[in-house]
Length: 100
Image 1 (cartoon, helix red, strand yellow):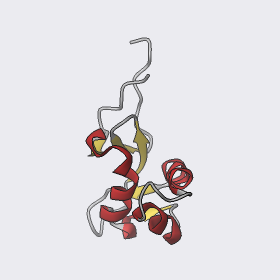
Image 2 (cartoon, rainbow, N blue to C red):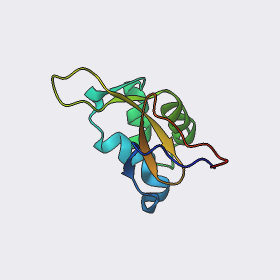
Image 3 (cartoon, rainbow, N blue to C red):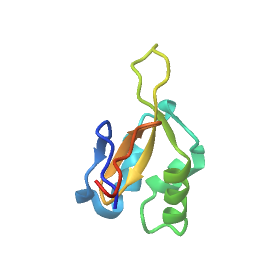
Image 4 (cartoon, rainbow, N blue to C red):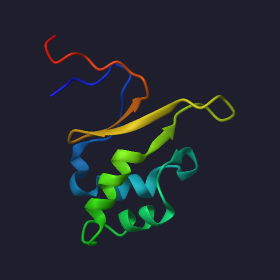
């Protein structure tokens, strides 16, 4: 497994377990996110008992972009990466080589 880029930011620890997707949908500022449909937030907020929960979460991990810039500044996009913990990884960040 690759180490994370130095600029990655921890969003949720794996202590939240199967509720990371629910908590993401509950606590994230949706106005700062693109690539996630409103119905996806509803599915995730309903929790892991829902039939579409994990498929929806996979779609969110694959497609979400979050603007991490301060209000009024030019967008600084980050994507999601989950390795147990959920991380924000700035777009274009350099990932360390596995061989290092």
